[in-house]
Structures are given as C-alpha cells and as structure tokens.
Length: 256
Image (cartoon, rainbow, N blue to C red; front, side, top):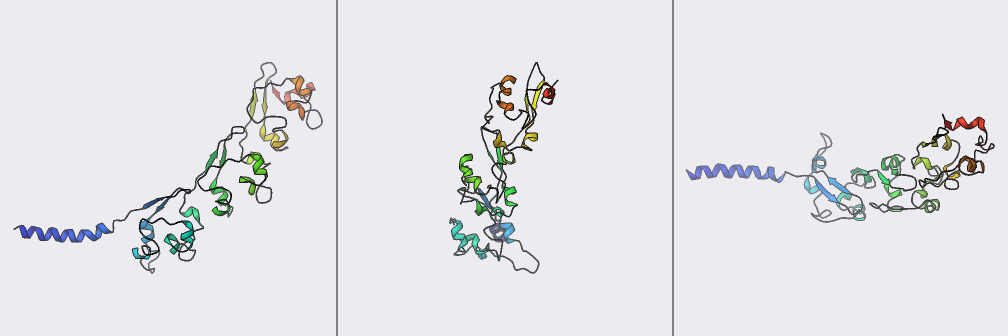
C-alpha cells in the first residue's frame, strides 16, 4: 500500500521540477551613478515573431555573461554581458541609455530666483544623446552646482546654452520662473509689476542685478527716490519709458 502512494508522488514531483526551474523573475541591478536597471526575463525570452527562433537561456548565460558578475559599460561595448546583443544590429545599441536607465526631472533649488526644473525628456527630444552631457559635463547621478558666471564661461548648462547650440543664458525666464508681483500701497492703490510685459521688451540682465537684487527684499523705494533714478525710475524717466514724475501716467501703475 505504501508503495502505491510513493510512486504517484514521485511522478508528480518529477513533473513539477522543470516548471519550477522555469519560474524566472525580473532582476534589478543597482548602478552607482545611473539608478536602477530592471532586466525582464519574460520580455527577452518572448519570440519577436512567429517565424523567429526561440531565444534560449544559453544565448545570454555563457562565458561573456557569468552569474553574479558585475560588468561596466566599457566591457559591454566590448561585447560582454548585454553588449552581446545590444550592438545596434541584433538589438538596440547601448547608446540608447534611456531604454534601460530610467530618467527623471531634476529640480535645482535656487535661493535668489526660485527652483529651476531640468527636464531630461525635453532635452532628449532634440536628438541629443546622454553621452553629450554624461559624463563630459555632468557626472551621472550627481547634483552639480554651478554659478551663472561659471556657466557663461562654458561650464555646466553654458556648454550648450550659448546662443548657437541652444538659447543663450541671457534668456533667463526659459529656466528661472517669473511671476507677477503685487506691491501693496494703502494711499495710492496697489501696483502690479508684470514680468511678462517687461521681459517681452527687455532682457532680465538689464534690471537684475544692476537695479534690483534678485533676492527677496523688504526695501521700500519712495516716489521721490524713483524720480531721482532709483528702482523703476531708472527706466521710467520719460525717454526709455513713461515717466514716474508726471501725474498723468500714475494710473498706469497704481490701480485705484
């Protein structure tokens, strides 16, 4: 009686071993500078078409890709690991970084002008390769800090944003957010300063930081000081723009 039970159990066990052996899962690789890379076994083992041959495990797991071994991108370009197939012929080339390395937007906190948002996807749409910036300008995975003076000398964003390869650094509002500013005036009506109207006529550098410091300030400037050429009065003197000294133009700024 015992023998009759043992044989069916043994048969079931033998049948389930191959199924368990093929129960493969996605594998996540943690890279030092370029985030996580998820390798999908199911996608790679899936047939491309009805007539295409099956991809066997041995097609990848061979002397060029040993288990639990770490391969650098340089080694992959030499045909090891993923580079066996991802050479631009059998599969997409290794240079197509975002197919494996997931990119995200990066926010740089700038005290003087507010946050600056860098969009990876927007830059990659211009047919730029990741290698254009990484690691020639930016080390992958880093959060570099560069001053505007350094950028104007060709560092960081300034390597491309020079007016030839991309819009110049002087087009500040393309990266630095601007907003309308309301000045509370109890006696003469509130004054709304429109960045949109002014940046449509002048460059940001014409006011910042020669006339106005970009850092938020509580300094109040009187009309008398403006008439002497300070603050808004630097331009609103009757030649560059309407004058702050004439009563007829007061309602252009002061809303009663």
